Image (cartoon, rainbow, N blue to C red; front, side, top):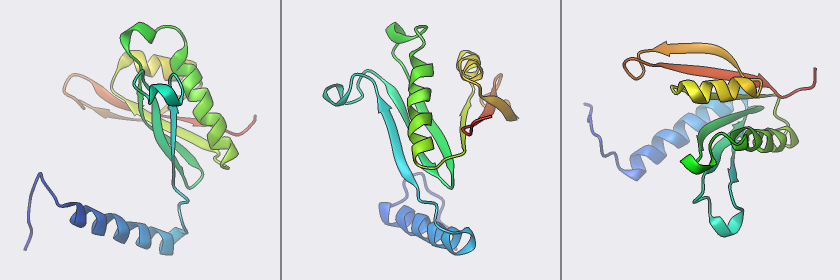
Length: 140
């Protein structure tokens, strides 16, 4: 029997997450997953002016969210956020970074930072493509 829901209990999600984590750890080793955030304005601003959120795991930085308010765009701040996250990821032993977007402007910003497209999902959302980009964090 299955239950299809848009309101799963926290306990159900925890059970799925713990089960998958245990399976993956037994299969390929622990991910050593750690959150990583770069917040604009430092601790006193509490990230309310934007920033970057993601995590490191299995030697990779994944940038889940990168957001800037309108008045901070076009000033190179996104690139500096990525650079700060990448530097921390290197300290954690990461060799690569990846990010995805369906925004053409964001894609260009990531490509300016050295990210290269490795995959694309057309019509996600309709009329756009979700683009997946990666970058090596090792020298050379």
